[in-house]
Image (cartoon, rainbow, N blue to C red):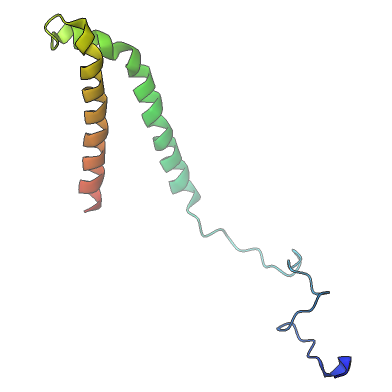
Length: 100
């Protein structure tokens, strides 16, 4: 076959056809992403770890002051773990209730 028999249309690219279209060929279209809603969501996602880390130093004092451990200081870490886990479980439940 001769080179003249090969279809050189844009549907059949060859090794000289650029893989990326130049910016001149692409129309400027607005982004389909809702930027305002995504920025609000990202700010909310940032607020949760900040609030959680700022309450962390005071949880042990709270558990000891509530006398849940009945004076046994070795049990404070256990109850802190229960409290932290329950916060995340309640948050997850609220998210599921909202979705369903």
